[in-house]
Amino acid sequence: MLLKKGKKLLKVLIATLAAVIVTLLVVSFNGMCRHDTIDLVIRLSDGWSVSFSDVHLPAIDRISEFRVPSNVQPGDTIIYERNMKDAESIPLPTTLRFHAYHVAVAVYVDSICYYRYGFGRFKEGKLVGSGIHLVNMPEQLNNHTIRVVTVVTEKAAAKSLTSIELLRSSSMTDYYANNSASITIGIFLMFFGMIAFITGCCAVGFDRAYYRLSLIGLFATLMGLWTINYAKGIQIFSINYALDTTLEYISLYLAAIPFGLLIVNMRSGKIATWKMNVLKGLVAFGALFFVVTTILHVTDVAHYPTFLLTYHCYIFVSFVFMVVFRVLYDRGAGLQEKILASGTVVFVLFAIADLFRYNIQNIFGLDKPFMESTCLPVGTLLFILLLMVGYLVYMYEELMDKTEKEVLRQIAFRDALTGIYNRAKCEHIFEVLDRDDSDYAIVSIDVNGLKMVNDHFGHTMGDKLLCTFADVFKTAFNGIGTTIRMGGDEFVAIVRAEHLSDLSTALKTMVLLEKEVKLPMTLNVAYGYSVRRRGDAVTAMDVYRMADANMYAMKLASKQQKPA
Image 1 (cartoon, helix red, strand yellow):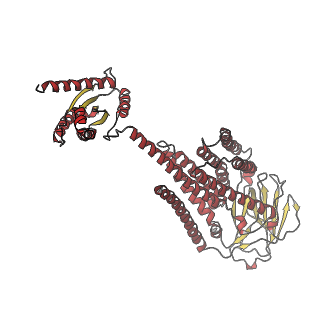
Image 2: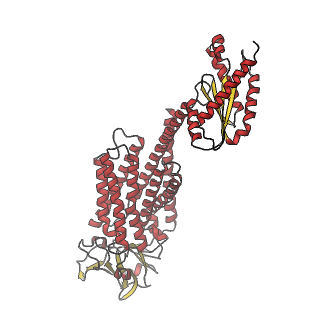
Image 3: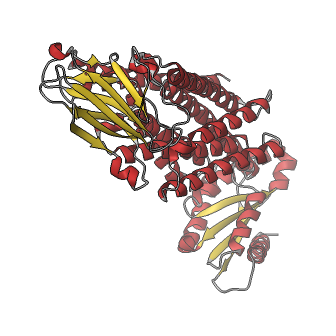
């Protein structure tokens, strides 16, 4: 009991240590990012006028107050304009930075175009993507007009430009510092997930328990990739907006599949059949959803962002089903199921909070830094850590179960008195020998005088005689053959082909060791053996009977040699 509690405590400590390491990584990364953070980041939140499809909208105090109309269609144009009459205080040179969602973008200063992106891809019907755009501005902005022209490229996916800023240079240090927690968690999840996935895939051939580790690793990798893309940390390495956005949606849509398979694996045989069938149906739908959306995306019929609402509904329905019908947890659930249920609740709560944040920001246009950062990576990290703790519990239980079965198997194959193998083991070996056409020998041995010892000295001394011979037997055949007690005073040795040449040596050693034994009576045995050669049409039992006959022949000859 103490050992079991100690093991559980160790697992909790491992999970806590992992959380501490991640926290330290986040703090360290945040500190490095903030070391040279730009102080002069000018947020151009006010003074903008917006026109939608050539219709000038009423003046707005802050750009975040403008929401893209719900009836927006691909090809609709939204133009943001601002006169830079207060630009005298802006240091030179400057870079315009803004986050654009699924729109083609052109940036003008007065009538001169300084930046264009996405118009060619939109004309070809390809995904334009979303990301943070950096536009080098002219040296003088005072009394000039900045005009940002955006063309909607995806239905129900475009968002307004909630944050337009001027920077001293094209550095993104301040952005990465503000989003360091999400980026660090994403990187951790990716690397941890890849290690777990590769380890699980390599080891699953030896033990199916590692299949669960590979699913945890795949889910962590996909969520890590999604986190890095969502936080735009991917732009450290790539500014291919279309590719980055594609990876973001692929990782998001795919993540439901290993998560569902993980639930199926963990709850298999523990819930009603109809619940399991529904669960498998949900996983199959997730896989079908990904395949269909991928085909539509690749053929440019419809792109991934178009199906985001459908995906959210699918995830919501799946979670409702698992909660309402208690798929994840029941009163008789084990520790790993309780951990899984706790992790899922944590993950769902963070997901709901993030959806709430996302929709509040879009509906009410709250231009606050904390409203721009997703909390889902934290929930994902906690979920993965709880999954790993649950997996450790699962592996511990599997190991204990296998150990218990192995111990029971060894007990079933061991003679209780002498500790060597018993008749059950002998019969098992005979079955193996009959399936393989190879050379081997069987030695049949009988301890002489056991009945006389039991009658004159008692059964305790008879048991000691048998144990003493078993020790001699094991020593003589050590590394040469398998030693077995068939029952009573009968013993058997099985010698495989590679040790047949050592058989006579083992028998001679056995006879010599018998003479060295110090007991109130003489230890003496009769033995006989029979060799089976490849191609012989005999079974192991036939060979044993021949060896037994040879043993009785030796016993008879020994009796005849004794003086009358």
